[in-house]
Length: 369
Image (cartoon, rainbow, N blue to C red; front, side, top):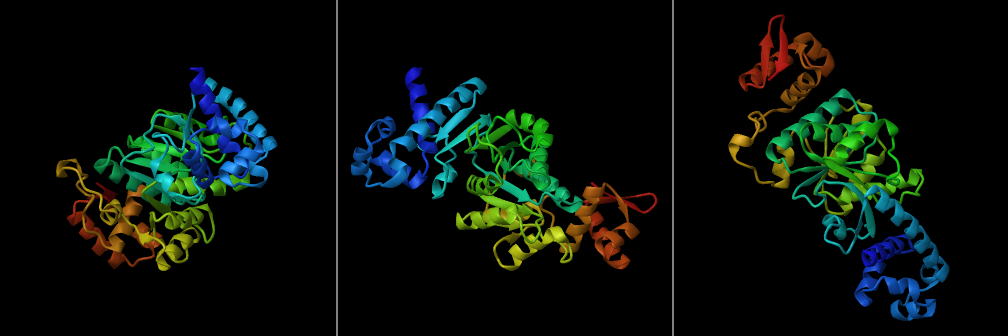
C-alpha cells in the first residue's frame, strides 16, 4: 500500500536527520504525532512547535534525509528487509530504556528480538581454546533449560562467531548486530554463518545499505549489543577492547554483566579479571552461575542436563573445561596445561569421576561424559 510505503519512508528519513536522537524524536511524536509534517513544514513553524534551532530543522538537512530514505526504501522492498521504528511493537523493547537507542533498526531474519530471555555474549577476536570451549559449553547447557533463549553478538572473529555458531548448533535463535548496512557481511568469512542465522535468528543494524564500513561504527553498535539483552557475558578480553566497552555500556544500562575468569598471566583474560576485581562483572564459571544470579526459573527437572547443577570447585571446573575442549587428556598433560601438581589433578579427577562427569579409559585417559 502506498500509504504504508510513504509512512515507512518518513520513518527512515526521520532517523537519518542529522542531530536527531530518540529524546527529540519522542518530543516530536508526543507533540504532533505526525512524521510527514516534519518534512513539509517551513523551518520557522518547526521551531515554533519544538523550540529547536540550528541544522536539525534546516530544510536542506531534512531534504537530504528524505533523499536517503527514498533510496533505502527501494533496497528494503527489494531485499524484504524490515524497518523497525521506535514507536512500533516489533522494535526491541529493551532498547527503549536506553537514552541513546537508535530511532530505527533494519532487521533481516525471523528471530524473536523481544524473546523472554536474551543474552549477549562478547569477547576478544583472539579467542583461545579455553574461551571458545567455555562459550560452547555455556550455550549448550543453557539450551537445555531455555530453548527459546536468544543469543546476541556482533558476528566478529573469535568469541562472537563462536557464540553464534554454538547457538545454531544447539537450536537457539541468534542475532548478529552489524556495524554496517545489510547489503554486505563483514567479515566476509562469516557469510555462510550469517546466512544460517537468517533462518534461526537474523541480522540487525542501525545503518542503511549505503553506509560504508567505518571503524567508529563498531564502537557505536556495542550499545545495541548491550541494550538488547538482559545480561552480557564477557568471555576473554585483553586490557582494552570492544568487549570491555560493551560491558561498560551494559553497566550504565543497568544490565547484569558476567565475566569468565582466567589465569593472571594470560593476555586474553586480563580484561575479564579486571572487571571481576573492580566489581564491574560477576564471576561466571558455568551456566548455573548465570541462572542463579539472574534468578531465572527452571523448567521441569527431567528437561535439565543431568550434570548442569553439580557442585564443582574452581579446580574441578578448570579440569572439566579442558577435558571438554580437548575431548580427552592424561594426568601428565593436565598438570602441564593447568600448572597443577599431579596429586592436585588426580584428587580432582577422582571427584569428577565420582560425580559422573568424566570417565577413565585404558592408558590413563580421561574423557568427559
